Length: 372
Image 1 (spheres, rainbow, N blue to C red):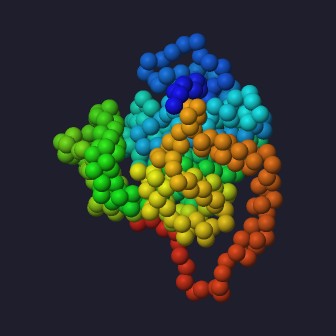
Image 2: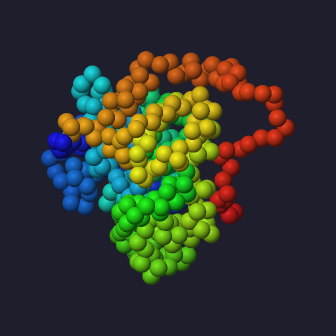
Image 3: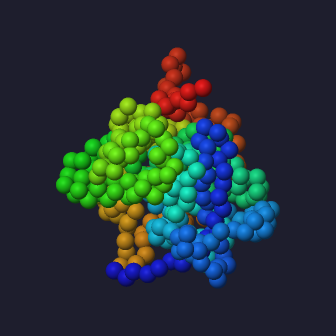
C-alpha cells in the first residue's frame, strides 16, 4: 500500500469560551488556501496563527459551503484521516470550492488550556459557540459538520441537543463509538482490545494530562498520583472524567455521554459510516433501532474498514468518496430549506406510528446537571 502526505495548511485562532460554566479557551484551525512561508514550532506542522489584522478581515458574504470538523480522541487538525476528506473539498477540482475549519478539543493539537478541565464525550459547548460565530461571520454560507470517532459521538450529541434549531444543513459521522459503555466492555474482553487499543488510548490521554498538569492540578477533585498510574482508557475515565464531571463511576459517565438516544432528536440529514470489523467502535454498540426510527439518518455499514481506516492500495481511503459525494449533494443539489418546510408543515408527524400516548420519552434528558 502506497503512503503519501496530504498538505493541508491552517491558520489558528484562539477562542474564549462564552459560557462561564465551561470557561477556558479552545483552538480552531481554519484551512488556509495560501501556504505560509513561516513555521511555528509551538504548533502542529503547516499551522500558524492568524495575525490580528488577518483575523479582522475573516468575515465574508460569499456563499461557499463550509465544513466544520471534530477529530477523534486526543487528536487534532493534523490527523491524516481528516485531511483525506478536506483535500478534495478545499481544492480546486470539481469537488472543491469549500471552506473548512477544525475545532481542536481543549488541550489537543498543541493548544493550551486555561482552566482545570479538558473535555469529555459530550463536550458540545465549543462546537455550539463556533457554529453560532460562523453563522454571524459568514451569513450566506451553508454550514456542515463531520465528526470522527469520539468527535462523531460529540457531534451526534450536539445535533440532538440542537434539534430543529440546528444551524447546520447536514452532517457526517465516521467510526462513531455510539454506546460508550458497550464499546468499553467489548474492548476489555480481548487481549488486543485491552493491551493494545485500551493501552494506547489511555496512555495518550495520560500524556495530555501531563502536558497540562499546571492547570489540571488546580482541580482538587483529581488525584494526580492516581492518574500517573493509569494504563487503560477506562482507568483514565475513572480517575479524570468521573471526578471532573461528577460521575461516580466511569460507566455512569459512559452511559450519560453516549449518543445513542441523541440519534432520536437529530433533525437534519445525517450520514453515518461504520465498519463491522471496527475493533474500537464495535458493531454491537450501533443503535440500529434508533437509527431506523429516524428518517433523517442514513447508516452505511461495511464488512471491512477497521477504525477510521478503509485503506486502499493506492494509499487513499474508501470513505472519502461517499462523504465528499454526500456533502456536495447536500450543498449543491438538495433543497434543504424546502425539506425543513415540509417537516414544519407536519411531514415528519406522518412518519409516527400509532395513536398519541400520554407518556413521553425525552432522549436529550441528561443525568449530569450543573449545580446552580
